[in-house]
Length: 291
Image (cartoon, rainbow, N blue to C red; front, side, top):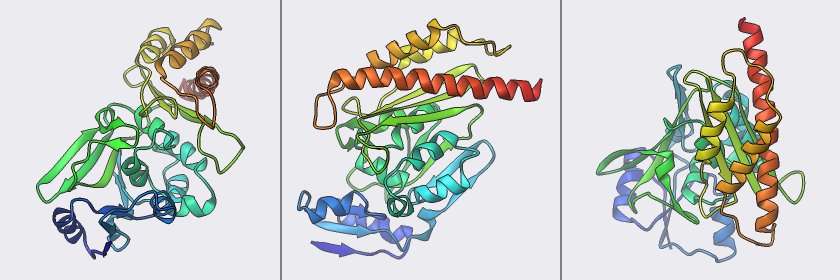
């Protein structure tokens, strides 16, 4: 196994072009587990830790350009305002050590259905784009098109994730997950919700309950038509119930060691109702402050 350690982004792209089967590593929170247990044996490992720009983020006020290696700990500390859903999800990731090393870019590269970053990225809006770079150029991949299957994404063999472009939140966002214990756990299922009052739409994201992270389009449309965006009146009791049913119906879970398919569907319905209640309460508060 070759070990490649580029000092710049251009060197990293050149190394991937020369070794298209190389495995990129930054935090290594998933990769090193697979290597240590001999579950994966790539022809080369590409260490990206010397490419400093991958650990930077910037914002133009409308969106955040999040470097692929910005650790979860910094997302929590620095981006809870513009990216509240992602920051909430970041708080649930592993231990403090993992949050100091793991990143959204790593989650995207692994493409595990249970990755905590995926649901809030999907819920954040259709403007979310993954920057995929190679010596051939740059692709901006819509987040909906990024996931292809279990631990499979649409990156070409010579492409690297440089950053993710995420719209700044224009309304409340929430994330919640169910695990076999309270902390340091892989999600049995997870759900993210984002309200977008600027255009009266809703975003959802389902994790660990289908071959890929996915949206719940029918649930989004139902909620868009059911919410009283203007006055922010109380929710009709039937709205959370129906919303939960539609979210559960959008999943395609399996039975495994962490939970049954039936339990995942039930839990998703509960998570959907809870996140809706939290988001709507926050939205009503915001309306009260601006009234």
